[in-house]
Structures are given as C-alpha cells and as structure tokens.
Image 1: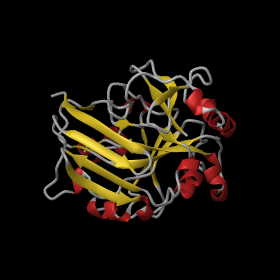
Image 2: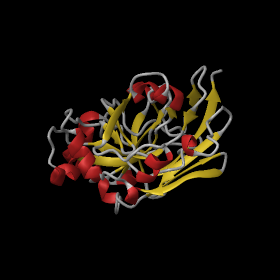
Image 3: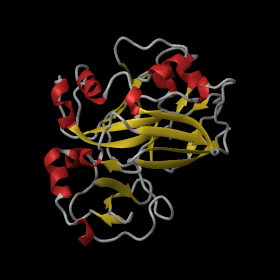
Image 4: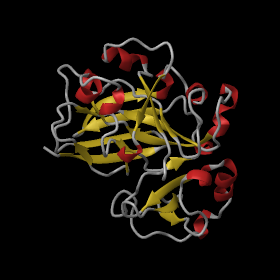
Length: 285
C-alpha cells in the first residue's frame, strides 16, 4: 500500500493511493497514519481492504489536493550522517567507523510539497535527498536479522540543512538540522511489500531543473537492517519513528564553488517507487 495523509496543515486525514493515482479516504478504518496504526497487524488489516470500494477524495494529489507528511505524531526523527562514502568524501570527512546518529526536531516535519523557509540570517541552507524508514513494530536491542520485521514502510525525506549552524556555530549538528520546514516527508508511506529492493533504489534531486544529486542506496555504507539494530542500542524505537538514512553526493556544500539556497528556487527530488517532492524555497530575510 501507499499510505498518505491529505488536507490542510494540522487537519490531515488518513488515505491511500489507488492504482489510478487517486486518493481514497481511510477515515472510516483508521484515525491517522500514526502510532499504533503502523503496527504489523494494523497494516495487514488496511492492506486487506478493498481499495476500490473506499471513498474517492476530490482533487489530484500534489496538485490541487495537498498532501501532508505521510506519518503523523512522529515521536523521533532520527538521522544518519555520512552514510555514503562519496558524500563523506565531498564533505572532506572520513567514513565513520560506526553510524553517526543525530536528530531533527519533529517541528521540522512538513508535507512533501510545502515551502522550505530559509531562516533569517541563514547563509548556507542546503539540500539532501534521503531514504526514510518508518518504524512499525517498536523494540530495543533489535537483532539485525530481525530488523526488517520492524519496518512499516519507506518514504522520501529532504534532510534540509543549514551548514553554518551545523558546522560553524559550536556544538552538535542538530543546530543546523531541525529548523522549521527542514523535514519534508512523503508524499506517501510505501509498505515493504511494494519495495522490491530497498538496497538498490535511485535517489535524485534537482534545484531549478539542474540535477545535483543522482545516486543509489546500493552505495550506502551501513544498510537499513544494520541502522535499525544499531539505533535500537541507544534508544527504544517506537511505532511512527523515522530513520533518515543519509544522502548521496551532490549537496550544495560539495559543489565547487559551494552553492546554497537563497530563496526563489524550486527543489524537486524523488526516489524510484517512493514518489516525488517539490518545494518552493522562501527566504525569511
């Protein structure tokens, strides 16, 4: 299934995408695409529904029908840094001997096509297309061999980052990662049965029509099962938590000369089989 949330910001309703690309309403069957609704038994119950019998929602998704973040009430937004060797190289940093974990504040989460707002005074706002993994069955000290049983689905993430805040303002990376609007998520949550090979998905990102990122999850240093098991050593994972798994090369910081967002641009990004995001960039001065 492709599960989603549609409607006005803060008033999103649960839905799914049918084979014709129309949104079907799931409100009669689940309160939200969040929390316990992402447990394996609940996902199986939704998958058993006759999709074509569900009410059709007026409008075209990502056109005249806004989609919100594909997961609601996210408890933790966990990110992995330097997880592609070629991205580490363009950043001038070594591949870490263990996964680098940092957090984005959940207040950064927006819909896949909502505006990115450059913070006042920002000079180095950057982009990062990433594969997002959404936890279904929670757990702690998860065995790597069992990790995929804890996945509710996959989605597209834009890990928007302010590099001056991240690298030059003292302290941890989190300063530059969690500004409001820095976490576009969606357009939909794709359940694992629809993802043939999460280890070989193409990721790409354009700014104003120019391709900057064009990579594949095949070059990830630490794969999804390892990341789930590793993160669960340091925190309990709970239904609806998101793990954003790192970005391939081509970020603004890695350009020669470096190229950052200034406002007025359009960022478009996607992952094969998981959908596309489009954001307008707005400078707040």
